[in-house]
Amino acid sequence: MSKALLIKSYTNLTTGTQGQWNELNMASSYIQGIETGKILEGLTAEKLGALISGVPTPWARAKLFKFALQTLANPDPNINISGLQQFYDMLHGEWRGLLAVIALFPDRIRFSNPVEMNVRGNGYDIAAAFGRMLFEDKDVWSNQDVLAKSPDVQPYIHLIYYRDHLVGGTSPMTGVFTGVSYASLGDDASDINWYRDGKFEDPTAFLSPDQLQKVYLFMKNMNGNLEAFEKKINSQRGDKQLMNIGGFKQMSRKWEQELLYRGGGNLRDKGPIAKYGNLECPFSLLFMSDVPVYLKPDYTFTYTNDGDYKLIGDIQNLLSEDKFVIGWAEDANARPKLSDGPVFYLRVKELRDGSMSYFTLPLSERGIDIFKNNLRGLLGYSDGGNTSLTGVITDAGQLAVTLIVEIDGQKVTLNTREYEIDWMTDQGKVIMWPDFVSEKWNKYYLYSEFTADAQEQFQPVFKWQGEFVRTIDNNFWTGDYQLLLMKTS
Figure 1 (cartoon, rainbow, N blue to C red):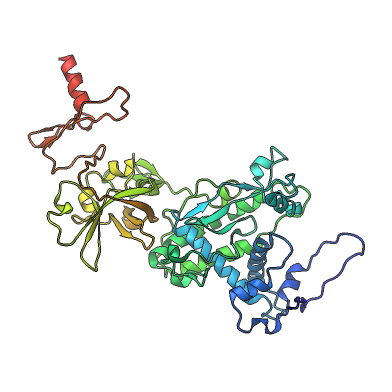
Figure 2: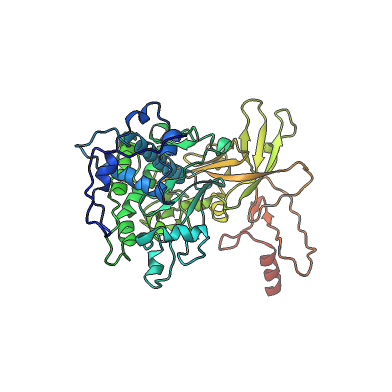
């Protein structure tokens, strides 16, 4: 039978007054000074995690992350550096690793809707029991904006999923924290170099230059929100002691500076940042980002509206929000080739055998409107300058699309967006793109037999002497305009 661990620390605790509740003011020093003896020999995350899994509260994991950041930010020089230092380093690495994934892969990360923990719920309800064990911290784990109006609002947590694998949750003490076990990611995380042995690690040394830029901007933005976040979580404390997140703030800002130093002075201080729309207060405040982008007359972009430029808003929205694309596979020796046709595709070449895959363009309606006259350059049919749309097929069998645009003269890579692929095996189909014409098209067919309740109305686009006919407003001249002209003549 295994023996229970007895905790011994370099630091002594004052016991307080017998028979009444006493505030534990020396918790941090006591925890830092815990002697682990030979436990650290041959230590692994699984081994030490198992040893510390017996803390009698479901919130132990979240609180351990708070203690880790707090201890690493303010180590006690009078205490031996061993103790739980190595374990806290592991938690710190996981915390950074999860934040990097949130910053880089908004298509893979999903925050659940708030999971409420009704403290007045059934005694056998797990969520209700978890809520009751928050004790006096229930207000910190609640939506403070709603709590200010309704004292009956319940604490909640957003669960964090990576491609439908539960990997962590939100915490007012550290922003996010990882779960105890998320080792089942497998091939779904094969391209994340800092996911090792079933855990996230500190990603700093593994980030590519483009990833480094994105994570830096994400952390810089989050750190800019930290003061407002801290004020918000403490806004309904009343007479209770304020929640101290000093360790969170210090370690978050320290990482921002590490990333900046690693960038060697080449990092931009402004750019697109991953967004998550379903977060509630206070996490909507912590991860809030607003980086407006404007479209210039030359169809490049700028962060500054120095003229009558068109507001684009979140430039990430140039990519389609659909969940899938249509794909065609083509052998290297196939003739004729789809690329010789009068339609633009997103092409992905397999380097090993020369085969080619073609995909419908994953652009939003706004993206099509902006790039419609530069699709040849955008898709690599000709030189596209600083703008390009490329794709790769991931190990998970999805199409990962990267859009690079020019903002203020610099190439800026948007967050990769991933799509399920609906492979077409029957070539006898007609695929139609709305609001799109090709210079290669010379024949147009109008299908006019609609049922009474038809939702789609197709209109022809006319050419005259080799040029597309447009109205004075520069819109395509369609059957509607012709009909109107005939009525007025």
